[in-house]
Amino acid sequence: MEISLAVLLALMAYRMYTLARLRPFRSTSAFTPASVELAAASFPAAEATRDAYQRVTAGQSRKRVRANDLVTQLHIFSSIQLTDVRHHGLTLRDAAPTLKSLAVAYFYGAACGLAFGHVKEREKILEAAIKVIQHALDIGDIVIEQMLSDLTTSSSLLHCYRNGLEGAEHWQQHRFVPETQSLYASLTANALL
Image (cartoon, one colour):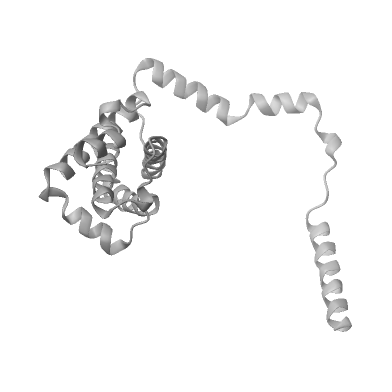
């Protein structure tokens, strides 16, 4: 046991020695306030910010949103809506399957609303939306697939889908959801609570 520890210690000392010879230590005194100011002046982020501001003010920039950003927006949107529902005293994780199916329709509509206009990323966003919905409502793969396949069979489900779609589009532009398009309003309008 002691021999293996001694071998490991010797190996570590050898690696430290070879690394020190390959990359010599630089003194921190080389960084003076003047060199920091010069580095900050030539920092590419400042130029990029200035260029972005000029594009926005010139009206030339159409912000390209990546699929990951849209999934993040869906996480935020669903968290806001679930918090609102909890503030009204309703816990969807323990709710009846019919109530969960209304919530699934709402969140799927929200995902479609956020993905609208992003054709290339749409499939990835909708796959991620299913994962977000599964996590938020504690639903299995088979159950959520069944709920989504039954989406067009009920006017209540379509109403929740439409409210989710319109609510997400409104939230994306104004950062709030009108009360009539919230998840809680959709659930109370379409289910007996």
